[in-house]
Image (cartoon, rainbow, N blue to C red):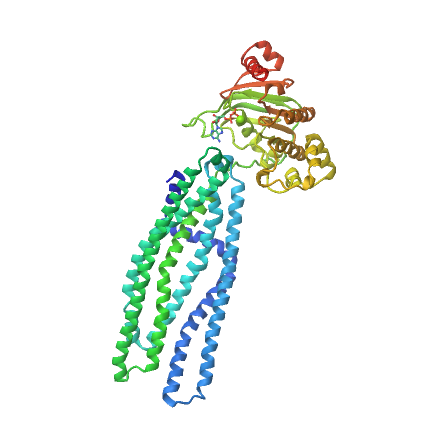
Length: 598
Ligand SMILES: Nc1ncnc2c1ncn2[C@@H]1O[C@H](COP(=O)(O)OP(=O)(O)O)[C@@H](O)[C@H]1O
Ligand SMILES: [Mg+2]
């Protein structure tokens, strides 16, 4: 079993009692907006419980009227009322289901929306530390479990309880002796239920955990399928999948075993109760203490009595599962990994420069056990300038962009915009200043147009301009459907180069102040690259650019080149300066020149 699936088992543990209470209180808050419907529901359930015992009364009346006066004419109204009650009971059940489903769905919709909103404000750190599959489960099946608890757990238990109460009261008011006989079986039933609950509950939770493991495995495999196929891992994956399925099946079979023992036992206890009841009543019948009608009514109600108790164990399991789900959901909702918003009233307005001032940064917290990535780093990006960063893989280049965009915050020092700490600005407005083009372009499923404009309004003139500048128009003109072309999930239908052009168009349409390029041309053919270089050259004439360069040929005319090594600038200057210096940069250039020449 992989670590991930093990984790699923562990996170499925149910909270202690006091915590359980807090969970329920917190859950109840989601029902608050629907208090009116819920009050109606309670009234309906009380009415339902009443309607549950009323037929017994009528059974007595009908049989008595037959046996005493044999007058069938007076029977008619009684029989009709009997049917009326049954119909009313059905109607109440119907309305109850509808209201219940409606309230449940709405409350869950609220919760799901809250979860999604919460997810959207999490930090990059958070997403790096939480697998997609697990987050998906929170929003989908965990919320579904809660809905289940609401519709067939919690409310149903309350409804059952009211019905049982009505039946017990009815029995005792009619005949205390028979009622006691009927209820004598209760302790046995409760013990049997408790044993079942423990056995089945454990297997049930294990089944759920293993099911979750299957889900997350499939999710991961599907997203990585090309990799699986390229590395000929199919056999191994199939094997692993079968293993997961088998372990799920064995847990599932254990649940079934518990059920298949429990149900016959309950069946037996029910029959034993009926036998005892009939035996007891026959003694009393002879003495004339009980009449036949009452016996039939008791038999009728005893049957109803056992059904809810039999279901109680199952409902309890549903509750347990739902509580575990709610615990996980609340844990996610309580997660504090977010980049705090700034509270400065004025918006960022880039006039002079952006500057890194003695910053330190480590992904796992500076000065802790984590590795320091950026150390005492300083540098200035003046408005209108072209700054390029070069260095080995892992030198910390992309990290600088992460810090500028506030995907992460610096641990020491500060990054300033015209002297103001960027942490003081509104986060959204700060990020809107930057146009980020990465090596991997994320494409949303939808049309090309939607992918360019994102959530900005469509401005035809501007769009045309942007398509021209980014040279995406060459692609668009070739497509029969033009901008309305569906790009497929994650833009599968586009080549890497086309996606790159799209990223430029998207960035230009957003009209940022500063262009951030992270090895944007690393994995495309040289023709497209040449085209993109042209685009960049045009753009950078009027826009501040911060480029992480893979090919050194592309940054020859940068105003300043920073050579980064292990989070420290070891050289800086123009291309000419650095060549003249004959240091690290000059060596990199020679290296690449020999590669390119080869
Ligand atoms: N999200 C992350 N969590 C932890 N370490 C990271 C993370 N991203 C990058 N690193 C580490 O930080 C170092 C610098 O990474 P990066 O800035 O991406 O380098 P590059 O110069 O190649 O762009 C690398 O050693 C990398 O392993
Ligand atoms: Mg990088």
